[in-house]
Length: 420
Image (cartoon, rainbow, N blue to C red; front, side, top):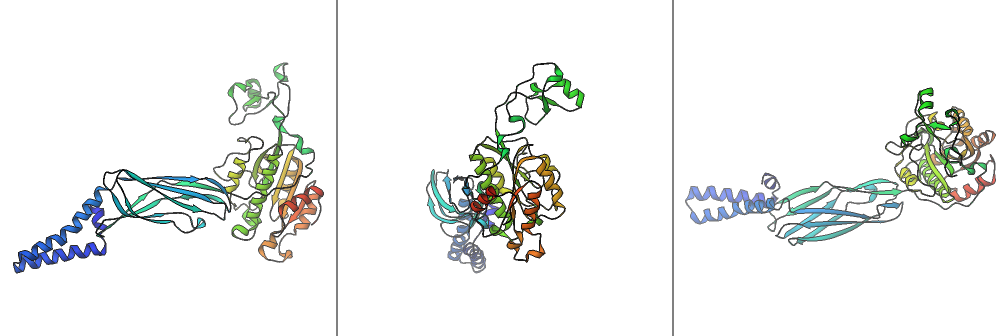
């Protein structure tokens, strides 16, 4: 009731004030008829507040998003099901859904009436133009009484999310080199059957079966070691994304970083379609906070869901240089495709080390001065970086804001350390 009285409209407050004023005048003047009118004026807002307060817990909400994973530019339908669980009708509802500004304006609905024990479906659509994971909700409901005496606001705090994936472009087939043959623990090997010293072991990883722990080796090295078992051959590939804030230019969907994310998504999807099991590593040697560790949580070959979900929410970080941990995340002998921003002199040592861990190393160097609109002399020259990468064994090309990724990828396959 207190909340209801605080929600009185101008009309409700006017009726209440008029009733109180008329009542005082009726008592002073001894007018019984005026007192009856005053009582009616004063009681009407009170009755409206009481009736509205009784409906407080009668409304419930269900929200359904279809589909809940879409690509930039695609459309998702959001269905709001408002249920009146009470026996009496509820009328004059104004509903406003809270959505991020990147999804457009806030959807609003005016529902004149919902009968008791009935539900109504309200549908709105979102078409995001920027990747990310966006909350839908909470939903604010404004309840009006039939006399317009008060407006009671309620909020359904439950939210749902829609994940907006970066767009993926189809890439042509190119020669990937010897690194496509697979690497690491996933090449077929026979399990050793000799003495304990002959057992092939590796470092323990999160999720390994404790029954595979080789205790004698663990005691010798001081760390948990597990037996390598015979495993099927699988091709491995790593997409290395430069997500340093200082390595990119531009803002919004047209920035060089967003171009790098789209390139990583397309390359990763292309490699997965070829049967590779693809990992995503950033310039910090780890994924965005809260995402799976690339060396421990791996998706199946051909499955890009985890990769695209990671790229949907990945952001830049403030690290100025490449972290040494980035090289540690790479699997020796596999394919590495790096999408690079600006490369300065201190970064070259890290990139040279990264090359040593890869069987085949390919790089797409973004011409970031073109995104910033500055002269090429004011930033590292992309052609010079590509040439230097070629001397280190990388196959590298330079890409600008107007270059199409399929053409860049085709050129990457046709050249070794070429200049564009």
